[in-house]
Length: 239
Image (tube, rainbow, N blue to C red; front, top):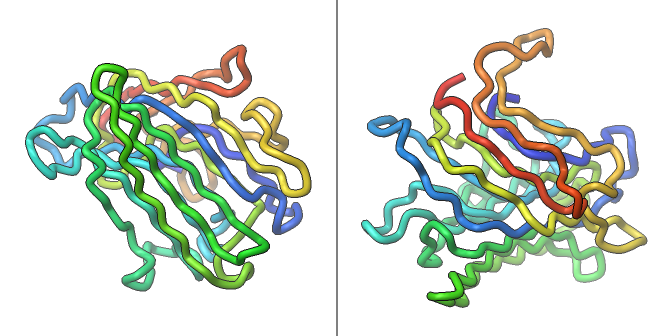
C-alpha cells in the first residue's frame, strides 16, 4: 500500500472476531541517515483491525525520529480509530499519543494490541526493557473502554516492521521482529508462521488498478525457521 511493510493476517470475509491481538518484540533500530535533511521517519508497531478505511483499528509501537533530546531518538506511541481512518480523519482523543520511554537504538521493545471481550476495552502497550548493559523498565499502557462494534475489527492483525508516517521513509539498519504472535479467538496465541490468511506486505505504492508501481522502499524477508521472526530491510527513501 506504499505506507506499510511487514506481515498481515487478513480475512475480509471472515468472522469479525477472528483475531483478538498481536504481539512482537524487537530491538529499536538505528537510523543510518541516508535520508538526512528530509522530513523522514520510521514507525514499527503491532495492530488489530482496519480491513477497510471505515473499520475500527488500534495499534502500539515506536516512532522515530522523535527528538525529545539529543539522546532520545524515538518515542512509544498508541493510536486508535473508532469509526475507521478514512483520509486520516479522527477525533482529537483518537490521534497518536506519544510517550517518552527513554528509547535509544538497541533497546529491547515489546509492543502489543489486544481486545478484551469480557471487560470491553482495547489495550495498547509498549515496554522498553533497555539493554543488558543498561536495563530499563519503562511502560506506556493505554486502555480504551467501549463496545465491540465501535472499537474492534478482528478480521485483520498487523506485524508492521516499517511504516513511513511522513512522505519519506528514514533509512535504518536491518530490523528483526521476534516472537511475533497472534491471538486467535477461542484458541490461544499462535506463531506468525501458523496464522491463517497471512500476507507479506512490501512497501510499494499501487495505482488505481491495484498494480504495484514505483520503487520498493522496504521489504520483509521470509519467516525464519522459528516460525516467529522475520527481518525487514530498508531500500529507498521515496516511492
